[in-house]
Every structure is written in structure tokens, then in C-alpha cells.
Image (cartoon, rainbow, N blue to C red; front, side):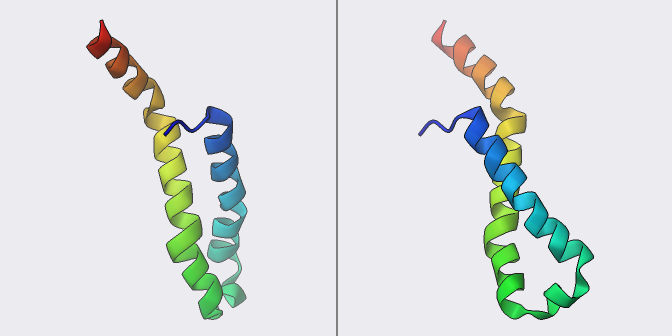
Amino acid sequence: MYLSHRLLRNIHLATTPILGAFVYASPLREISTFVTLVQWGAFPLAACAGLALWLRPWLARRSNSVRN
């Protein structure tokens, strides 16, 4: 499945405010639903999108060298 660079970047940027709110707004950390949303939704999405953005050039070079 191909995910465009723009989509990955937008996912990464959209989850950043949620993570920032979790880190800097201590009253939100007392809401169990918000904590669950961050732990099982926002953080994994941000981490996976960030890794995909970071590793994409390396994976593309590796894929091109295998084909040739």
C-alpha cells in the first residue's frame, strides 16, 4: 500500500497538537479517555508516520538497487 508523502506529513502534523496537549496540559492527563486516545491512537500514528517519512528515501534507494 502506497502512502503519499503529503498524507504521512499531514498525519504526523495532525497528531502533534494532541501529544503536546498531553505533555503540557496536566489536567488532560487526569482524563482516562484522553490518555487512552494518546497511548493507543495519537502516539502510534505519529511514530509510524515519522518513521515512514524518515526511512522513505533509504527504502526507495534499496528498492531501486534490487530492481536493477
